[in-house]
Image (cartoon, rainbow, N blue to C red; front, side):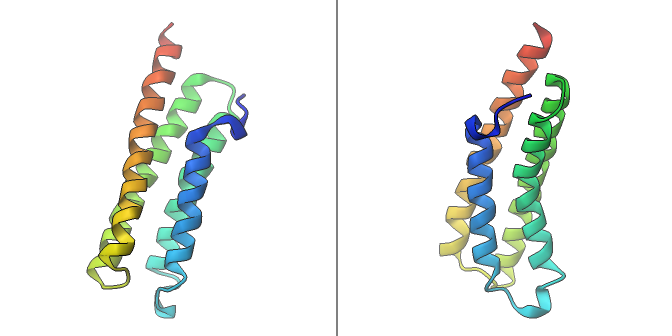
Length: 121
């Protein structure tokens, strides 16, 4: 069991989710159950899976949930690129979000490597 408040990766994932909610608030109402919902769910899934993994009883399970969180980061990246191509968000809004997502992907990858060494030792 891990203390979530001490996990930088979890805090950054929450910050990303909040930013995604702010950005998607401007999406058209006809996207409420489409791209808006999908994008928000992917963003929330990142921090939620980190939290669920942290609450598990084994490092192996934690590592698995970090992998799921990483998949959600890639899903979010794709949805934001689609939103940009649909002119729902500008490049000026998209680019900082993509940087945050890329940082999240690097952090999850590094975290998985660290957890894997703990499993193997």
